[in-house]
Image 1 (cartoon, helix red, strand yellow):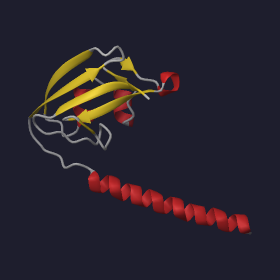
Image 2 (cartoon, rainbow, N blue to C red):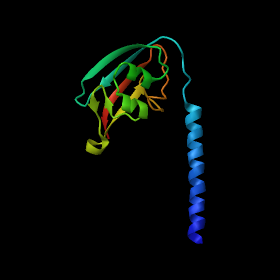
Image 3 (cartoon, helix red, strand yellow):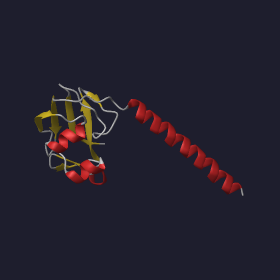
Image 4 (cartoon, rainbow, N blue to C red):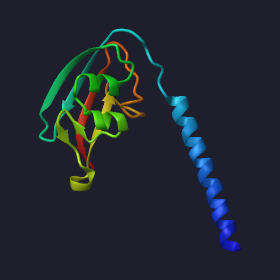
Length: 130
């Protein structure tokens, strides 16, 4: 009986935490801008070399623009979980690597599929080892 009450209490706390997290994500989701935009995406590889990619797009979100330019593949674009950028794979299970995304020098607070873009934005996607 005591275990059942504990499970119910923990379940209620978990639901409350998820609800607060969802509210914060929705409240902080950037507004979108329609129409033509020019953005710059710099991809910094594991070997520290970089590739600057100028993108002309009507996309409202970074993930859409990256997919249009074939910087990300369709499967990862659809899932929103990116391990391969511009053909290079970051595998956290192998070397604790991941892709860090910054916008105009600041780390983004949302994923690439939720990151709105405006004309003139500059993004850097950096191979990062934790």
